[in-house]
Amino acid sequence: MPESGEKNIIHLDLDTFFVSVERLINSRLKGKPVIIGGASDRGVVASCSYEARQYGIHSAMPIRMARQLCADAIILRGDMELYSRYSNLVTGIIESVAPVVEKASVDEHYIDITGMDRFYGSLAWTQELRRKIIRETGLPISFGLSVNKTVSKIATGEAKPNGEKQVPAEGVKPFLHPLPISKIPMIGEKTFHLLRSMGIATIGTLSLIPVEMMEKVLGKNGIVIWKKANGIDSTPVTPCWEQKSISSERTFDNDTTDPVLLNNVLVGMVEKIAYELRKDQKLTSCVTVKIRYSNFDTHTLQKRIPYTSFDHKLMETAKELFKRLYQRRMLIRLIGVRFSHLVHGTPQLNLFEDTPEMVHLYQAIDRMRRRYGKKAVIRAVGMGEESLIHAVLPRIKRDGCFALEGGSGAREQFLQLSDFPV
Ligand SMILES: [Mg+2]
Image (cartoon, rainbow, N blue to C red; front, top):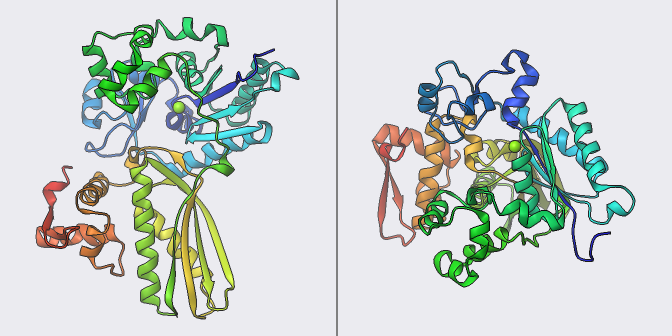
């Protein structure tokens, strides 16, 4: 029996997910170095097979460099629609048997099975779930099973590829201590080098550093990292239905049927909350549009889409839903947009979805928003008919630059083609 307060958390992670899906479609890719990351040399690696990793290739590496490391690598453009379908298939299988499931990213889930082992061995249950996923999807998947999300996730990393690892409460410290600090999920490159320069190489050493010193060096993050090094993590598994969505709505001062106004407001809302998504490093796979007529009749429509955080993809869906919803030409009192089914995912996951030029445009515009305020870019475009992203790039190409009003209104800033280092 576990001590009271002790938890049983599973972390499930599909192995080289994009590559595995491609191999389901085309079995000739099996055993070969495969890279997902766009057709052009200007892209970066979004995912790669273990065979490719043997050449030193890793995600976020420029495709050009990957090609130099392995001339035989098979480079695929990637298909987020296909991956989203398999991702949701896996989620469905897990949700059909598991009590509390959190979808953390397109290929990762957490499950809280605390208390289940009173009826059934938690390890045997998890092994059976893993076999079921492999049987029903054909996708390789690994899991870690331990006392909290952090330790389980690290255990999955150690179990990969196509493996499983249980770390019971009394085994947490012996498991963590010899591992390099880079195995702690939160430690990025900068923090890694900083800690290494302090002579800290293993999680064991890190766990012995006074927490006050960690705070002094890394702020609040230092405390979280120190806790993780000590196997402490009380973050709950947040089930999908409790996960936050992100939304915006607008009530008109005067009810309206003006199609230009309605379109502009819709476009503005999508741009605003898509920016929030990218800022939080989230992707959405469900768009909902709501309209309320002047008589308070309220209608909503939603649509599942491939995971994305790009305005132009979300805009397309929002406009389509609005068009289907707004059939009656009655006065509208309110419109709203909501993105739900959010998962963690850097915009990098979108990289193969569009041209690198498009990705850089988003990065440049988001940079401007951070610098000059959220509304700076939108105001400069004038909330026209077109979406922001489609309006800006052609203008830069035509005029050589694009003037932005500063957040203060006084300053002017110019976006130029050189802001898009493609
Ligand atoms: Mg994975």
